[in-house]
Amino acid sequence: MLFALGARALDAERVAESLVESDLRGHGSHGVRRLVPYAEQVRAGAVNPRARPSLVGDTAPAVAIVDGADGFGQLTAHAGVDALLDRVPRTAVGVAVLRRCQHLGRLGEYVEVLAGHGLVGLAFANADPTVAPWGGRQRMLGTNPTAWAVPVSVGAPPLVVDFATSATAEGKLSVARDRGEPVPTGLVVDVAGGDTTDPADFYSGGALLTFGSHKGYGLSVAFDLVAGLLSRTGSASDPSYHGGFGCALLALDVGAFVDPERFVADVEAFRDRVHASAPRQQGTAVLVPGEPEWQSRERASRDGLDLPDDTVVALDHLATELGLPTLVEHTIPIQEEA
Image 1: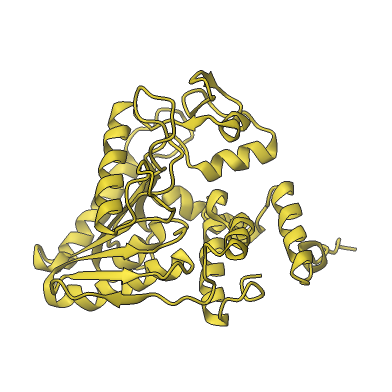
Image 2 (image 1 turned 90 degrees about the vertical axis):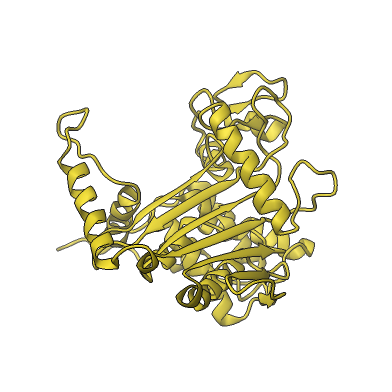
């Protein structure tokens, strides 16, 4: 589909891999369902499917400024990661700021790559206004996610933290709406500022709330101003904000501070202590961040993905518009054993 929308073959492959990986990790909000809004953005001229990110400016040895040229955000973010991998061996720390960056997908994807190269990876971003400030009901902030990851031993599940500063991601709200499911109280308010469990109220003029009341609000403001202003994307509340995702990626060379092998050993010792700790409910296990997603990936790789019906319908409709086979046509029936 991405190739049919005008993307180069290798670029389409990289974006598609990112979307599928999100579904495998259990984050359907950032999975293949995103192809539909991506197609809408391409047709509206908001996303240039053939754009390639480039490095601009040369302000400091440890700094990289990446211009995404309003191409697919995954390509821009990986260009930022590549710039950090080039700089950090010389500078010990590095910061990449992404300009003219469109939807990034799952932010944890990029810090996990950094961790895979023995670095501590951190990231935060701002986004279009969908979230009310603490005590308000008007959309002023984005979901403004953050993520970080640390190196782990070879073959171990990644240790990745990745979450929005809103009480839920908009994409997860959309998934609940498509499935006809209510959401817990405290995630969204309706247009009048009242509590609601109906995700449709958000799409009727309501707003998302921040997680952790004023604490999530504080983080959201920090990411909006730092990522938004350093990247020239602007604050989501500014009337001149025109869309896009301001993002900052940071990397730390563990070896510049401590012995890398000792660091990884201490990380794994921490994992072991958490696993051995007492669970609140009998028969459950205590996990570290990133492990639930890794378990989801293993299950989905073995058993396949179960996409919501509305997602399948929307993707099939897009495929038909692009003159491509539908998902139904690609489905291979399971043969019953004789």
